[in-house]
Every structure is written in C-alpha cells, then in structure tokens.
Image (cartoon, rainbow, N blue to C red; front, side, top):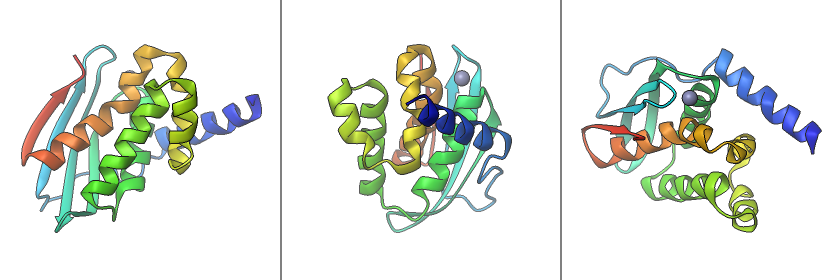
Length: 151
Ligand code: ZN
C-alpha cells in the first residue's frame, strides 16, 4: 500500500511540476473562475465545446501542489468527453474523496489516474484543493461566465 501511495505521490508531483493544458484559449466558449480561499488556490478554466463534448480545455492560476495537479489531471481526463460523462466522473471523484470507504473503492475503479488523489480523503482541508478544479468545471459547463468559491 505504501508503494502505491509513493506512486500516487509521484504522479501528483509530476503534474504539479509540468501541468498539462496550462494556458488560455483565445476562442473559448465557456469560462469559469474558482477560488479556494482557505488555501489560496485560484484558477480560471477555458473550454471549447462541440455540441455537448469538450474539445479543448486550458487552465491558468496558482495554488498548492494538490490543486495544480488536480486541475492538470482533470483537463487531461475530460478532453473529448460529453457533459454526462463528465458529470459521472465528477460524482465518482467526489465519492472517492468524501464517500464512505466501500463506496469510495467502487467509485475509484472507474477513475483511472484520478485515483492518485485517494490519499487526500485523510485530510479534509485538502479535499477542497483537489475538488476545486472540478467545481469550477461544473460551473463553466453550466454558464458562460461563472465563478465559484469553496467557502
Ligand atoms: Zn490548496
């Protein structure tokens, strides 16, 4: 188990150091800002959609390693996915971090790389860092220009 945790740690550090899909999108058709004042994490998401599918996504902002790695992995995971697929992932990710252990284990099975955040469930304050990108994503999908805060 600790070897697995080391591996998870490595993935998080890698995505923090070299975030995927970082930047802006000039012709984004959805945009949202997320703010986690408890930790100081801030990010802005830019999305391009084709019908109900996300074709491109970028993020910019700053924050702790968990929040940046989570935004990076989230953008990588949802590119090409439909709104309903994204909603299902969001729900599973939430279960992984906050659900009771048996539900979390089941939810984790379909999450792939996103499972690296499993250890975060031990640290409730950090759960907000890991879910910020997802809350912001849901806001972006709902409105054209939205902002969310974890507080
Ligand atoms: Zn944070």
